[in-house]
Image 1 (cartoon, rainbow, N blue to C red):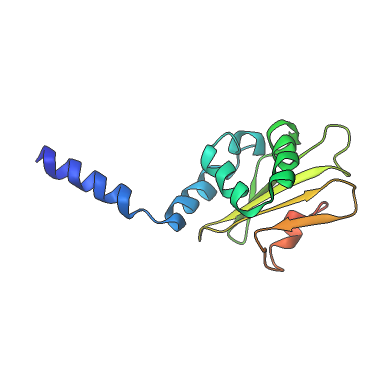
Image 2: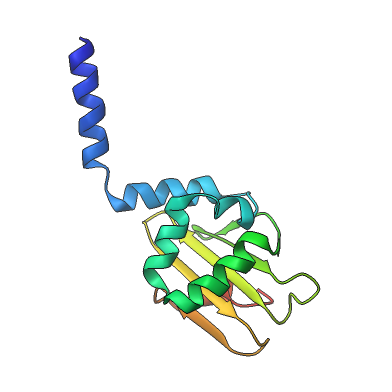
Length: 132
């Protein structure tokens, strides 16, 4: 019986799809501060895959060390932000995850121009934009 359970556990790990892993990330992120969520290497790796290196370095600085609030969920999208202390309206990093395995991010460094990563649909962009 032990071998059967061991084999079942290995099969479960091998067959876990990226979607299932991202679903776990979205569920895990809900109601946690962004700086806590990005301590998870799987989250950082997911964002790194959708963002150029230079943008990722700036994004991760504010996601890891910025001011944030607990991540919320709206219409199946878990989202939140990290921003530069005393300058949140100008410099901020945002993260959004859904329960289908999609990961999106945005970065604003000048208070006006927001770069979006992961090709977010129009319904997700407001969640990645300051003021929403």
